[in-house]
Length: 231
Image (cartoon, rainbow, N blue to C red; front, top):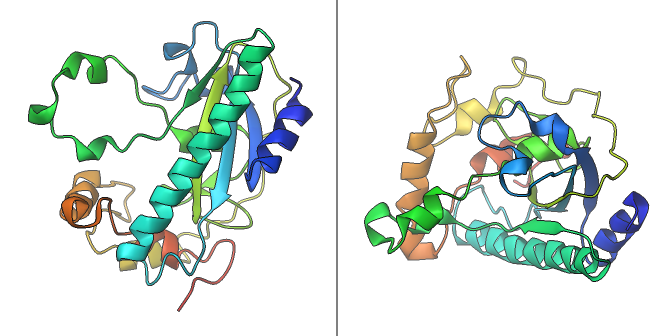
């Protein structure tokens, strides 16, 4: 498949946006090299869907969990179908499914080796490399239309595709805007760029067994990039 065919297919399957990055653009991202998952990787396809403001409720609660679970499953279906076409054409493609590993504690794992030898992959870095947006002060991927209110998935392939140009315009207005830092209930976001993600994880994990998923998206909810968040 060619780049435009892939984008058309992704949108026909329900993606709200899609971009393509050269795998080389992610070589300097620690721990997130595409070649760690696909030998000879040349291209990374990133697909995304918007998070409805209504689903984010007031940034916390069960509607957030429901929305994120739904979008993760939907995106997994989209990238699986695209990768399937690559295989039908005799090409290699690896759909990087979203798997919420925070459900599993180390002592619960029967095979830690399987988990530990599968490198992590950053959808956010891939989305920025694919020209779909920028990083915000909240450390989220910011889309020009939907801001931080998105979910992402990716496909890695050894097929060389035409990449998109990096996004040039800046949308995050830090330090003029401090909404994400001010409203973070776990105080994980810091003004000095020191992000305490253990605090974020602890806040999320407290609700995992109750809701089946983390229930806080306050940094997405209050970010003014894209559109005014729901009241």
